[in-house]
Length: 595
Image (spheres, rainbow, N blue to C red):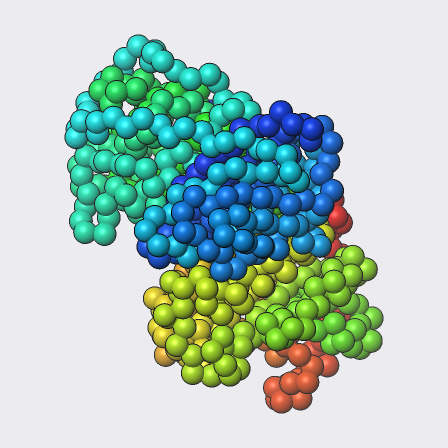
């Protein structure tokens, strides 16, 4: 993903949030004592005998709700197996979710809370009915839109008059979320197996549709009913459209153009439009490369997705919903060099004792979290007191037993949301969200040292590693943890496989980092991975020297217990580093509370 100037005024600035729902039911506002509530129920993954669901509860009334319980009835054989960001109960078909300590209040006039759960079922998995917030009915689901014939296989790029039968403009009653997600889709062509049109509406930015290498080409999605269309997002792969139009139709035959450009430059095009239709089409007339047209995602919204505020520094965050603090942190590191860091608070204190200056970054570890030692509040307290940058690595104990280097075949668990693997991930991303709710962004370095073949998450190869990384990212999205700066990490040199071969993709990474800075070439190696991502040294034995080392944006020195074993005078190197005015210490950071 990259950030660039809008195209002829029709493109918004940064990428909007991708909604992961496979099925979506929006419950309209109630007329009860609380003033109203709305429930958005999303099936985000369905594997035939079970599913993962995400639930958003919105308080549309004028009074905040303090302490909430959402009740509903399952219409099928669903049984909740686990729940996150809420506490579950279930008796037969009746189920409830009750707030936990960090999300008891739903603010008035549109405030919301989110929780999720896994269910098992037999037969089918129909959406729940009868949602009640603290005993007040939230209404019933919208009726299922009527079915109609599939659109013609190859509509022409014609334009027509205004469409009849358009719904009312977007507003409180408009359907929420990505209307195109997993809807029926067709295209003029597909480059080959694995590059079908369905990939452009599957909610996975790791898959894509790619057309034949000729002009013109098109892709269109059937929304199932005439809907208001207020925002369309085109997430281009490297093969993009130089000239294209976005069009809508009520019948798949007569088309109305809502937006277009003759100067497309790829990346993520976020188009603010004003129209309606059952079918939405991207009609490409001129390719931007010698290849075809290729989209990671085609997204359609009746209610435009708000883009969190943040600076434009030439790098949009991997998470389209990243909050302003995460965005500011990415841009701060992108525009600075030699931001100092140290693992562990006690060791950062030691650096201050040695040099009189305190590192700007302190790295913490989630290692003991899955064994019951949670230190999130201490991290929040440190951030508030020291006003420094929080980083986290995760020496993850194997979910099947053993430490972070144990033999651990995690691949069967990747498709099993009831597994300990998922439970560990959901625990950690839940703690990251708590840190975010306290106003603190986090440099999160999961699955570190990717290409050294030592950690258990590296021992099943690149594809399994990348799949696990994307799973962690997706669970963070479901948990609403949007304060994360995603740090990809390995060894830029000296390993059997190239660091680039482990890269999960631009849509999942913000920073590309190396451990144990070994040569001047490591800097250029990291810079060459991905689309101009910011780089860093996430773990090393000694601080960088601005007089001799490349201008890495930041570095983090490993724990002092290993300083002596590095073969270097780490204490002396810290003194030299902190004596150099180019080294950034904590007192030189901006006021992150204002980000």
